[in-house]
Amino acid sequence: MSSWTRALAATRWQLLGVAVFTALTLIATGMVLGTIRSGSLGPTHEYSAVFSDIAGLKKGADVRIAGVRVGRVTGFELDQGRAKVSFEVSSDQVVGKDSIASINFLNLMGQKYLGLDNPPGASSQRLTEGSTIGIDQTRAPLDLTELFNSFKPVFELIKPEDVNDLFANVVAVLQGEGPTIASLTKQTATLTTTLVERDEVIGQVIDNLTTVMDSVNANKTVVTDMIASLDTLTQGVANDQEVLMAGLDNMHRLSQETSSLLDESVPTINRNVRSLNAFEGSFQQRKDQIVQGMTDAQGLLETYLKSLGVGSFLNVYVCQAYLTIVGMLDKQSLSMSDQTSSRCR
Image 1 (cartoon, rainbow, N blue to C red):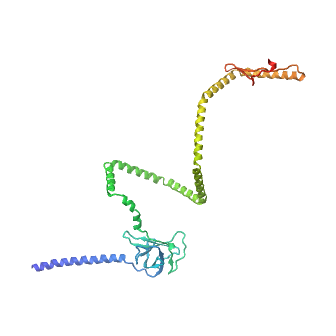
Image 2: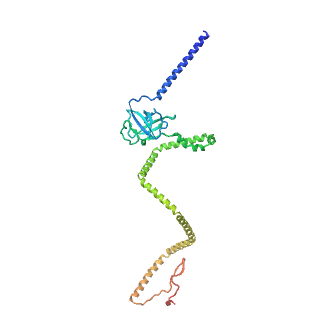
Image 3: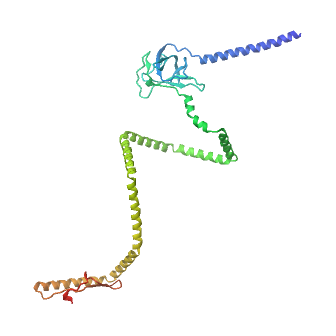
C-alpha cells in the first residue's frame, strides 16, 4: 500500500470522528435548546400586574403556580413610574381574583420567574381575562446586591489574617481530640434521641404556648394597657427616686436601731424568761397552798361583808401591803405612793 493510500485512510477515520462528534454536539445542543425554549402553551389568557421593581425579570420568563410552569411573560411597560408586566397563562389554569404576584429566583444563575399564589382565605372567583393585578397584590424581587451591601460594614471589619488565625486555631484545637469529638457526637445523638422520645411532651408544651399566645392576643388591649400602666409606674418611681431612696435610708437606720435595741434587751429578756420559768415551777409546787389561800380569802371577805350589812362594827384600813414570793421575789411594796396617811402614823 502506497503512502498516499495510508494517508487517505488515516484522514478518513479522522473525518469520521469529527462527523460523529459534530452530530453528538448538535443533538445535545438541540436537547438543551428544547429544554430552555418555552414550549407551546395552547390557548392562553392575557393578564398584567403592576410592580414597584422588576429587576432581573426577562421577557419570556416562566409564569408558575405552585412551582409548575403555566405561562410566560410577554412584555413590560412603564405605568406612572411603575413597571407593568404583561403575561399569559394557559386557559385551563385558574388565576384567582385575590392572587398574589411575586418575582422569585428560578436558579442560582439569577434567572427569575413570575409566581402566582392564592393567599389563605382567598376568594374562589376567577380573575377576568385582561385584568390587572394591583400593586397591593404584588411583591417585588429580593435585591441581592442591596442585601450583600448591608453586610459591607461587617465584611470591612473582618481581616483575612484574622480569618486565617481563627481557622488555624480551630484546627489546632481539634487535632488529637478524636475521642473527645466522638464522645461529643455520641452525647449529641443521645440528646437527639431523648428529644425524639419526648416529642409528644414537646408538642404539648408548644400547644400550651400557642394557647397562651392566643389568650394574650385575644386580650391584647388589656395587655397593652397593663404595659402602659407599668410604664407610668416606672416613670413615677423615677420621678420620686429621691423620696424612695430617703425612705430606704430611714428603713435601714430603723433596722439598725431595732437591732441595737434587741441586742441590749436580750440579757433582760433572758432573765425575765428564766424568772418566769422559776415562777412557773414554784407555782406548780405551791398551787395547793395558793388555792387554799384564795378559798380562805373568799370566806374572810364574806364574813366582812356580813358585818358591814348589820352595822359599822369593823373598819379595815390598809396602810401598807407587801408581796413576797419565796425563792423568786423579795419583799416588794404594793403601795402606789411614798406618802403615808395620817391614820397610819
